[in-house]
Image 1 (tube, rainbow, N blue to C red):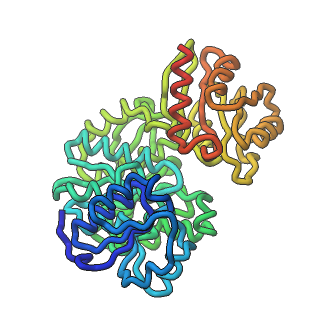
Image 2 (image 1 turned 90 degrees about the horizontal axis):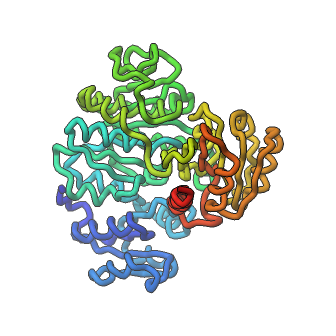
Image 3 (image 1 turned 180 degrees about the vertical axis):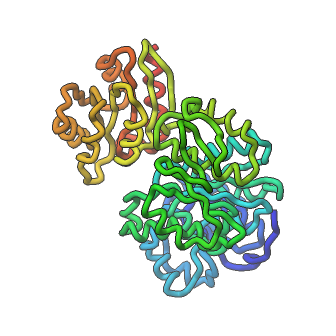
Length: 450
Protein backbone atom coordinates (compact mmCIF):
# COMPACT_ATOMS: atom_id res chain seq x y z
CA UNK A 1 0.00 0.00 0.00
CA UNK A 2 1.21 3.49 -0.84
CA UNK A 3 1.14 5.62 2.33
CA UNK A 4 0.04 8.77 0.51
CA UNK A 5 -0.08 12.12 2.32
CA UNK A 6 -2.90 13.65 0.24
CA UNK A 7 -5.38 13.47 3.14
CA UNK A 8 -3.05 13.81 6.12
CA UNK A 9 -4.39 16.34 8.63
CA UNK A 10 -7.38 17.21 6.40
CA UNK A 11 -11.05 17.26 7.41
CA UNK A 12 -12.71 14.55 5.31
CA UNK A 13 -16.44 13.83 5.41
CA UNK A 14 -17.50 10.26 4.68
CA UNK A 15 -21.15 10.50 3.65
CA UNK A 16 -23.12 7.26 3.90
CA UNK A 17 -22.08 4.06 5.57
CA UNK A 18 -22.44 0.46 4.36
CA UNK A 19 -19.30 -1.54 3.57
CA UNK A 20 -17.74 1.07 1.29
CA UNK A 21 -18.20 3.93 3.75
CA UNK A 22 -16.77 1.87 6.58
CA UNK A 23 -13.72 0.80 4.56
CA UNK A 24 -13.10 4.35 3.31
CA UNK A 25 -13.31 5.72 6.87
CA UNK A 26 -10.81 3.19 8.21
CA UNK A 27 -8.39 3.86 5.34
CA UNK A 28 -8.60 7.65 5.68
CA UNK A 29 -8.04 7.35 9.43
CA UNK A 30 -4.98 5.22 8.71
CA UNK A 31 -3.73 7.91 6.30
CA UNK A 32 -3.94 10.56 9.02
CA UNK A 33 -7.14 12.32 7.96
CA UNK A 34 -9.56 13.92 10.44
CA UNK A 35 -12.59 11.82 9.52
CA UNK A 36 -16.22 12.76 10.16
CA UNK A 37 -18.69 9.98 9.35
CA UNK A 38 -22.31 10.87 8.60
CA UNK A 39 -25.09 8.34 8.01
CA UNK A 40 -28.90 8.51 8.01
CA UNK A 41 -29.37 5.30 10.00
CA UNK A 42 -29.46 5.90 13.78
CA UNK A 43 -26.33 4.87 15.69
CA UNK A 44 -28.14 2.18 17.71
CA UNK A 45 -29.14 0.47 14.42
CA UNK A 46 -25.75 1.00 12.81
CA UNK A 47 -23.08 -1.55 13.88
CA UNK A 48 -20.48 -0.31 11.39
CA UNK A 49 -20.85 3.30 12.54
CA UNK A 50 -20.68 2.11 16.15
CA UNK A 51 -17.40 0.34 15.42
CA UNK A 52 -15.95 3.53 13.90
CA UNK A 53 -17.09 5.49 16.96
CA UNK A 54 -15.27 2.98 19.17
CA UNK A 55 -12.14 3.53 17.07
CA UNK A 56 -12.27 7.21 17.98
CA UNK A 57 -13.75 8.63 14.77
CA UNK A 58 -16.45 11.30 14.95
CA UNK A 59 -19.74 9.74 13.93
CA UNK A 60 -23.00 11.65 13.29
CA UNK A 61 -26.03 9.47 12.64
CA UNK A 62 -29.77 9.88 12.07
CA UNK A 63 -29.71 12.91 9.74
CA UNK A 64 -27.53 14.85 7.29
CA UNK A 65 -26.88 18.27 8.93
CA UNK A 66 -25.99 20.95 6.38
CA UNK A 67 -23.77 22.77 8.86
CA UNK A 68 -21.22 19.94 8.56
CA UNK A 69 -19.76 21.83 5.62
CA UNK A 70 -18.99 24.80 7.87
CA UNK A 71 -16.35 22.74 9.65
CA UNK A 72 -13.61 23.11 7.08
CA UNK A 73 -14.46 19.98 5.10
CA UNK A 74 -11.86 19.65 2.32
CA UNK A 75 -13.18 16.52 0.59
CA UNK A 76 -16.28 14.28 0.67
CA UNK A 77 -16.17 10.54 0.11
CA UNK A 78 -19.75 9.58 -0.64
CA UNK A 79 -21.55 6.27 -0.74
CA UNK A 80 -22.25 5.55 -4.45
CA UNK A 81 -25.98 5.16 -3.81
CA UNK A 82 -26.43 8.71 -2.47
CA UNK A 83 -27.64 10.93 -5.36
CA UNK A 84 -25.98 14.23 -6.15
CA UNK A 85 -29.33 15.89 -5.42
CA UNK A 86 -28.59 15.37 -1.72
CA UNK A 87 -28.54 18.86 -0.10
CA UNK A 88 -25.08 18.39 1.42
CA UNK A 89 -23.64 17.36 -1.95
CA UNK A 90 -25.35 20.24 -3.74
CA UNK A 91 -23.98 22.70 -1.21
CA UNK A 92 -20.52 21.10 -1.42
CA UNK A 93 -20.54 21.38 -5.22
CA UNK A 94 -21.32 25.11 -4.97
CA UNK A 95 -18.44 25.52 -2.54
CA UNK A 96 -16.09 23.62 -4.88
CA UNK A 97 -15.46 20.82 -2.37
CA UNK A 98 -14.26 17.66 -4.19
CA UNK A 99 -16.73 14.72 -4.06
CA UNK A 100 -15.25 11.28 -4.66
CA UNK A 101 -16.13 7.60 -4.12
CA UNK A 102 -13.95 5.01 -2.40
CA UNK A 103 -12.74 3.65 -5.77
CA UNK A 104 -10.66 6.83 -6.11
CA UNK A 105 -9.06 6.13 -2.73
CA UNK A 106 -8.34 2.56 -3.82
CA UNK A 107 -6.50 3.71 -6.91
CA UNK A 108 -4.42 6.26 -5.03
CA UNK A 109 -3.10 3.78 -2.45
CA UNK A 110 -2.80 0.67 -4.64
CA UNK A 111 0.54 -0.72 -5.73
CA UNK A 112 -1.29 -2.95 -8.23
CA UNK A 113 -2.77 -1.92 -11.60
CA UNK A 114 -6.52 -2.05 -12.24
CA UNK A 115 -8.82 -3.64 -14.78
CA UNK A 116 -12.17 -1.79 -14.70
CA UNK A 117 -15.40 -3.32 -16.00
CA UNK A 118 -18.67 -1.45 -16.46
CA UNK A 119 -21.88 -1.69 -18.50
CA UNK A 120 -25.62 -1.99 -17.97
CA UNK A 121 -25.70 -5.80 -17.93
CA UNK A 122 -23.11 -8.56 -17.59
CA UNK A 123 -20.60 -6.75 -15.33
CA UNK A 124 -20.46 -9.37 -12.61
CA UNK A 125 -20.20 -12.32 -14.99
CA UNK A 126 -17.45 -10.62 -17.02
CA UNK A 127 -15.55 -9.53 -13.91
CA UNK A 128 -15.71 -13.04 -12.47
CA UNK A 129 -14.63 -14.63 -15.76
CA UNK A 130 -11.63 -12.31 -16.01
CA UNK A 131 -10.64 -13.07 -12.43
CA UNK A 132 -10.99 -16.84 -12.89
CA UNK A 133 -9.00 -16.90 -16.15
CA UNK A 134 -6.21 -14.72 -14.76
CA UNK A 135 -6.13 -16.86 -11.64
CA UNK A 136 -5.95 -20.07 -13.66
CA UNK A 137 -3.12 -18.46 -15.65
CA UNK A 138 -1.16 -17.58 -12.46
CA UNK A 139 -1.48 -13.82 -13.00
CA UNK A 140 -2.21 -13.08 -9.30
CA UNK A 141 -5.57 -11.31 -9.67
CA UNK A 142 -7.65 -9.78 -6.88
CA UNK A 143 -11.36 -9.04 -7.29
CA UNK A 144 -13.11 -5.91 -6.03
CA UNK A 145 -15.71 -3.19 -6.55
CA UNK A 146 -19.44 -3.42 -7.06
CA UNK A 147 -19.18 -7.21 -7.03
CA UNK A 148 -19.20 -7.13 -3.23
CA UNK A 149 -15.60 -6.58 -2.11
CA UNK A 150 -14.73 -2.97 -1.33
CA UNK A 151 -11.96 -1.77 -3.65
CA UNK A 152 -10.12 0.42 -1.12
CA UNK A 153 -10.00 -2.55 1.25
CA UNK A 154 -8.50 -4.84 -1.40
CA UNK A 155 -6.04 -2.16 -2.53
CA UNK A 156 -4.43 -1.92 0.90
CA UNK A 157 -3.01 -5.45 0.63
CA UNK A 158 -2.37 -5.51 -3.15
CA UNK A 159 1.22 -5.87 -4.37
CA UNK A 160 2.79 -4.71 -7.62
CA UNK A 161 2.54 -8.19 -9.16
CA UNK A 162 -1.22 -8.35 -8.51
CA UNK A 163 -3.96 -6.97 -10.77
CA UNK A 164 -7.21 -5.71 -9.24
CA UNK A 165 -10.19 -6.77 -11.38
CA UNK A 166 -12.91 -4.28 -10.49
CA UNK A 167 -16.63 -4.19 -11.28
CA UNK A 168 -17.71 -0.54 -11.41
CA UNK A 169 -21.16 1.05 -11.45
CA UNK A 170 -22.01 4.41 -12.98
CA UNK A 171 -22.53 5.69 -9.43
CA UNK A 172 -18.95 4.81 -8.49
CA UNK A 173 -17.49 6.19 -11.71
CA UNK A 174 -19.07 9.61 -11.20
CA UNK A 175 -16.84 9.98 -8.14
CA UNK A 176 -13.39 9.51 -9.69
CA UNK A 177 -10.70 12.11 -10.38
CA UNK A 178 -7.44 10.27 -11.06
CA UNK A 179 -8.61 6.63 -11.29
CA UNK A 180 -6.95 5.11 -14.36
CA UNK A 181 -7.40 1.44 -15.23
CA UNK A 182 -4.73 -0.22 -17.33
CA UNK A 183 -7.58 -1.96 -19.15
CA UNK A 184 -11.14 -0.53 -19.24
CA UNK A 185 -14.13 -2.58 -20.43
CA UNK A 186 -17.47 -1.06 -21.52
CA UNK A 187 -19.87 -3.92 -22.20
CA UNK A 188 -23.14 -2.30 -23.27
CA UNK A 189 -25.50 0.58 -22.56
CA UNK A 190 -29.25 0.34 -21.99
CA UNK A 191 -31.83 2.61 -20.37
CA UNK A 192 -31.13 2.01 -16.69
CA UNK A 193 -30.88 4.02 -13.45
CA UNK A 194 -32.62 6.95 -15.08
CA UNK A 195 -34.13 7.83 -11.71
CA UNK A 196 -30.54 8.65 -10.69
CA UNK A 197 -29.04 10.00 -13.92
CA UNK A 198 -32.15 11.66 -15.45
CA UNK A 199 -31.17 10.90 -19.07
CA UNK A 200 -29.50 8.08 -20.97
CA UNK A 201 -26.88 10.55 -22.18
CA UNK A 202 -25.87 11.41 -18.60
CA UNK A 203 -25.86 7.73 -17.72
CA UNK A 204 -23.61 6.96 -20.68
CA UNK A 205 -21.19 9.76 -19.82
CA UNK A 206 -20.99 8.44 -16.25
CA UNK A 207 -20.03 5.02 -17.62
CA UNK A 208 -17.50 6.59 -19.99
CA UNK A 209 -15.73 8.18 -17.01
CA UNK A 210 -13.90 4.86 -16.96
CA UNK A 211 -11.91 6.10 -19.97
CA UNK A 212 -11.23 9.69 -18.96
CA UNK A 213 -7.75 9.26 -17.46
CA UNK A 214 -6.51 6.57 -19.81
CA UNK A 215 -3.60 7.30 -22.15
CA UNK A 216 -2.09 5.66 -25.21
CA UNK A 217 -0.31 3.22 -22.90
CA UNK A 218 -3.67 1.74 -21.79
CA UNK A 219 -6.41 -0.34 -23.44
CA UNK A 220 -10.15 0.18 -23.85
CA UNK A 221 -12.24 -2.92 -24.63
CA UNK A 222 -15.26 -1.91 -26.72
CA UNK A 223 -18.47 -3.69 -27.77
CA UNK A 224 -18.56 -3.20 -31.53
CA UNK A 225 -22.22 -4.34 -31.62
CA UNK A 226 -23.47 -1.48 -29.41
CA UNK A 227 -23.79 1.89 -31.19
CA UNK A 228 -23.93 3.83 -27.91
CA UNK A 229 -20.75 2.17 -26.66
CA UNK A 230 -19.01 2.86 -29.97
CA UNK A 231 -19.94 6.53 -29.70
CA UNK A 232 -18.72 6.78 -26.10
CA UNK A 233 -15.47 5.04 -27.02
CA UNK A 234 -14.48 8.17 -28.94
CA UNK A 235 -13.79 9.72 -25.53
CA UNK A 236 -11.00 7.20 -24.89
CA UNK A 237 -7.36 8.01 -25.73
CA UNK A 238 -6.31 4.41 -25.07
CA UNK A 239 -5.63 1.68 -27.62
CA UNK A 240 -9.03 0.23 -28.57
CA UNK A 241 -9.70 -3.49 -28.84
CA UNK A 242 -13.16 -4.48 -30.11
CA UNK A 243 -15.32 -7.54 -29.56
CA UNK A 244 -18.39 -8.67 -31.50
CA UNK A 245 -20.77 -11.63 -31.70
CA UNK A 246 -21.97 -10.59 -35.18
CA UNK A 247 -18.88 -9.30 -37.01
CA UNK A 248 -15.62 -11.03 -37.90
CA UNK A 249 -12.79 -8.92 -36.47
CA UNK A 250 -9.14 -9.38 -37.40
CA UNK A 251 -7.77 -7.30 -34.52
CA UNK A 252 -10.20 -8.16 -31.73
CA UNK A 253 -12.40 -10.93 -30.34
CA UNK A 254 -15.21 -12.52 -32.37
CA UNK A 255 -17.03 -15.71 -33.32
CA UNK A 256 -16.12 -17.48 -36.56
CA UNK A 257 -16.85 -21.01 -37.79
CA UNK A 258 -18.41 -21.92 -34.45
CA UNK A 259 -15.39 -20.88 -32.40
CA UNK A 260 -14.12 -17.89 -30.39
CA UNK A 261 -11.15 -16.06 -31.91
CA UNK A 262 -8.79 -13.39 -30.63
CA UNK A 263 -6.70 -11.53 -33.21
CA UNK A 264 -7.14 -14.35 -35.72
CA UNK A 265 -6.25 -17.14 -33.27
CA UNK A 266 -8.84 -19.79 -32.45
CA UNK A 267 -9.29 -20.09 -28.67
CA UNK A 268 -12.23 -22.45 -28.03
CA UNK A 269 -15.25 -23.95 -29.79
CA UNK A 270 -18.58 -22.40 -28.77
CA UNK A 271 -20.01 -25.87 -28.12
CA UNK A 272 -17.33 -26.46 -25.45
CA UNK A 273 -18.36 -23.40 -23.38
CA UNK A 274 -20.34 -24.26 -20.25
CA UNK A 275 -22.04 -20.88 -19.74
CA UNK A 276 -25.36 -20.67 -21.66
CA UNK A 277 -26.74 -17.78 -23.71
CA UNK A 278 -25.75 -15.42 -26.54
CA UNK A 279 -25.53 -12.52 -24.09
CA UNK A 280 -22.88 -14.47 -22.20
CA UNK A 281 -20.87 -14.89 -25.40
CA UNK A 282 -20.51 -11.09 -25.36
CA UNK A 283 -19.29 -11.23 -21.78
CA UNK A 284 -16.86 -14.04 -22.63
CA UNK A 285 -15.45 -12.18 -25.64
CA UNK A 286 -14.89 -9.06 -23.54
CA UNK A 287 -13.14 -11.14 -20.87
CA UNK A 288 -11.09 -12.86 -23.55
CA UNK A 289 -9.72 -9.51 -24.75
CA UNK A 290 -8.59 -8.61 -21.24
CA UNK A 291 -6.90 -11.87 -20.33
CA UNK A 292 -5.13 -12.26 -23.67
CA UNK A 293 -3.73 -8.73 -23.33
CA UNK A 294 -2.52 -9.76 -19.86
CA UNK A 295 -0.70 -12.76 -21.37
CA UNK A 296 -2.95 -15.55 -20.08
CA UNK A 297 -2.26 -18.94 -21.71
CA UNK A 298 -5.00 -20.44 -23.88
CA UNK A 299 -5.04 -23.59 -21.72
CA UNK A 300 -6.09 -21.51 -18.70
CA UNK A 301 -8.81 -19.77 -20.70
CA UNK A 302 -10.18 -23.05 -22.04
CA UNK A 303 -10.15 -24.66 -18.61
CA UNK A 304 -12.31 -21.90 -17.13
CA UNK A 305 -14.73 -21.67 -20.06
CA UNK A 306 -15.31 -25.42 -20.08
CA UNK A 307 -16.29 -25.46 -16.39
CA UNK A 308 -17.61 -22.00 -15.40
CA UNK A 309 -21.39 -22.33 -15.04
CA UNK A 310 -22.26 -18.78 -14.03
CA UNK A 311 -22.24 -16.41 -11.08
CA UNK A 312 -24.73 -16.91 -8.27
CA UNK A 313 -28.10 -15.24 -9.02
CA UNK A 314 -27.09 -14.59 -12.67
CA UNK A 315 -28.54 -17.40 -14.83
CA UNK A 316 -27.07 -19.73 -12.21
CA UNK A 317 -27.70 -23.44 -12.75
CA UNK A 318 -29.16 -24.84 -9.53
CA UNK A 319 -30.03 -28.51 -10.17
CA UNK A 320 -32.02 -30.94 -12.32
CA UNK A 321 -35.10 -32.65 -10.87
CA UNK A 322 -37.09 -35.19 -12.90
CA UNK A 323 -35.60 -33.87 -16.13
CA UNK A 324 -36.38 -30.20 -15.32
CA UNK A 325 -33.40 -27.84 -15.09
CA UNK A 326 -33.68 -25.01 -12.57
CA UNK A 327 -31.90 -21.65 -13.08
CA UNK A 328 -31.64 -18.74 -10.64
CA UNK A 329 -31.46 -15.36 -12.39
CA UNK A 330 -32.64 -13.21 -9.46
CA UNK A 331 -30.18 -10.48 -10.51
CA UNK A 332 -32.47 -9.80 -13.51
CA UNK A 333 -33.97 -6.66 -11.99
CA UNK A 334 -34.97 -5.13 -15.34
CA UNK A 335 -36.72 -6.23 -18.52
CA UNK A 336 -33.55 -6.30 -20.64
CA UNK A 337 -31.90 -8.76 -18.30
CA UNK A 338 -34.92 -11.06 -18.42
CA UNK A 339 -35.03 -10.85 -22.21
CA UNK A 340 -31.41 -12.01 -22.28
CA UNK A 341 -32.08 -14.83 -19.80
CA UNK A 342 -35.07 -16.20 -21.75
CA UNK A 343 -33.06 -15.98 -25.00
CA UNK A 344 -30.30 -18.09 -23.46
CA UNK A 345 -32.45 -21.23 -23.75
CA UNK A 346 -33.85 -23.13 -26.70
CA UNK A 347 -35.95 -25.50 -24.56
CA UNK A 348 -39.45 -24.63 -23.30
CA UNK A 349 -39.25 -22.23 -20.33
CA UNK A 350 -41.42 -21.88 -17.24
CA UNK A 351 -40.75 -18.26 -16.25
CA UNK A 352 -41.02 -17.02 -12.64
CA UNK A 353 -41.27 -13.23 -12.59
CA UNK A 354 -42.47 -10.26 -10.57
CA UNK A 355 -41.41 -7.77 -7.92
CA UNK A 356 -41.30 -4.07 -7.21
CA UNK A 357 -43.58 -1.92 -9.38
CA UNK A 358 -41.61 1.00 -10.82
CA UNK A 359 -44.43 2.09 -13.08
CA UNK A 360 -43.38 0.35 -16.30
CA UNK A 361 -45.39 -2.14 -18.35
CA UNK A 362 -43.93 -5.40 -19.66
CA UNK A 363 -44.88 -5.20 -23.33
CA UNK A 364 -41.19 -5.50 -24.28
CA UNK A 365 -41.20 -9.05 -22.91
CA UNK A 366 -44.03 -10.22 -25.18
CA UNK A 367 -41.82 -11.02 -28.24
CA UNK A 368 -39.62 -13.15 -25.95
CA UNK A 369 -42.53 -15.28 -24.75
CA UNK A 370 -42.51 -17.44 -27.90
CA UNK A 371 -40.97 -20.43 -26.10
CA UNK A 372 -42.21 -19.55 -22.61
CA UNK A 373 -44.83 -22.26 -22.10
CA UNK A 374 -46.01 -21.03 -18.70
CA UNK A 375 -45.73 -17.91 -16.56
CA UNK A 376 -45.74 -17.88 -12.74
CA UNK A 377 -46.00 -14.38 -11.27
CA UNK A 378 -45.77 -12.81 -7.81
CA UNK A 379 -45.19 -9.43 -6.16
CA UNK A 380 -46.52 -5.95 -6.97
CA UNK A 381 -46.12 -6.34 -10.74
CA UNK A 382 -48.05 -9.62 -11.00
CA UNK A 383 -51.15 -8.05 -12.66
CA UNK A 384 -49.01 -6.31 -15.31
CA UNK A 385 -47.12 -9.51 -16.08
CA UNK A 386 -50.40 -11.43 -16.34
CA UNK A 387 -51.60 -8.85 -18.86
CA UNK A 388 -48.38 -9.24 -20.92
CA UNK A 389 -48.76 -13.03 -20.83
CA UNK A 390 -52.36 -12.84 -22.04
CA UNK A 391 -51.36 -10.47 -24.85
CA UNK A 392 -48.78 -13.08 -25.91
CA UNK A 393 -51.53 -15.71 -26.02
CA UNK A 394 -50.08 -17.69 -23.14
CA UNK A 395 -52.53 -20.26 -21.83
CA UNK A 396 -50.77 -21.24 -18.59
CA UNK A 397 -50.44 -18.32 -16.17
CA UNK A 398 -50.36 -18.79 -12.41
CA UNK A 399 -50.51 -16.00 -9.78
CA UNK A 400 -48.91 -16.92 -6.43
CA UNK A 401 -47.98 -15.04 -3.27
CA UNK A 402 -44.22 -15.57 -3.18
CA UNK A 403 -41.15 -17.22 -4.71
CA UNK A 404 -41.51 -20.40 -2.65
CA UNK A 405 -45.04 -20.97 -3.96
CA UNK A 406 -43.82 -20.06 -7.45
CA UNK A 407 -41.30 -22.91 -7.44
CA UNK A 408 -43.95 -25.47 -6.53
CA UNK A 409 -46.38 -24.07 -9.12
CA UNK A 410 -43.70 -24.08 -11.83
CA UNK A 411 -42.81 -27.69 -11.13
CA UNK A 412 -46.48 -28.69 -11.41
CA UNK A 413 -46.82 -26.85 -14.74
CA UNK A 414 -43.63 -28.33 -16.19
CA UNK A 415 -42.53 -31.64 -17.67
CA UNK A 416 -39.23 -33.35 -18.32
CA UNK A 417 -37.01 -31.32 -20.66
CA UNK A 418 -38.32 -27.93 -19.50
CA UNK A 419 -36.30 -25.06 -18.04
CA UNK A 420 -37.65 -23.53 -14.81
CA UNK A 421 -36.21 -20.01 -14.71
CA UNK A 422 -36.43 -17.36 -12.00
CA UNK A 423 -35.80 -14.12 -13.91
CA UNK A 424 -38.05 -11.53 -12.26
CA UNK A 425 -37.59 -8.45 -14.55
CA UNK A 426 -38.13 -6.38 -11.39
CA UNK A 427 -36.29 -5.20 -8.31
CA UNK A 428 -36.88 -7.29 -5.20
CA UNK A 429 -37.72 -4.58 -2.67
CA UNK A 430 -41.46 -5.20 -2.47
CA UNK A 431 -40.90 -8.53 -0.68
CA UNK A 432 -37.14 -8.82 -0.06
CA UNK A 433 -34.26 -6.67 1.13
CA UNK A 434 -32.03 -7.73 -1.79
CA UNK A 435 -32.12 -9.74 -5.01
CA UNK A 436 -29.70 -12.17 -3.30
CA UNK A 437 -32.28 -12.90 -0.61
CA UNK A 438 -34.87 -13.57 -3.34
CA UNK A 439 -32.49 -15.90 -5.18
CA UNK A 440 -31.60 -17.77 -2.01
CA UNK A 441 -35.29 -18.39 -1.30
CA UNK A 442 -35.67 -19.77 -4.83
CA UNK A 443 -32.70 -22.13 -4.33
CA UNK A 444 -34.04 -23.32 -0.97
CA UNK A 445 -37.49 -23.94 -2.45
CA UNK A 446 -36.00 -25.91 -5.33
CA UNK A 447 -34.05 -28.18 -2.97
CA UNK A 448 -37.22 -28.75 -0.93
CA UNK A 449 -38.74 -30.37 -4.03
CA UNK A 450 -36.24 -33.24 -3.89
